[in-house]
Length: 120
Image (cartoon, rainbow, N blue to C red; front, top):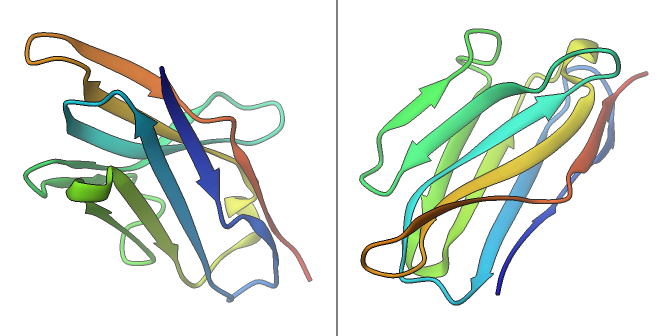
């Protein structure tokens, strides 16, 4: 069994910062890639940022320069540092993990989501 659990969401004023964390635990051979997606009310889920086990990162244009993704491969953990937050960043943020369950099998897992609200 594999679990993916996010933490760190909350309410913040415009211009503020939050740090999200996501831990994958259970029977995991290794981490292939992890990332953050978000879904605002009435909108489709979209990629925010992703990072491979080799440290290659990818960001949505809307968050470049404001958000930073990082990871600790040994702990199967990914972080999202969010600075200069805007009201349009308000959404449920989901962690996605592409994990090597065995040496030959790759599986995709999602967390339950954490709410981020940017409002004055």
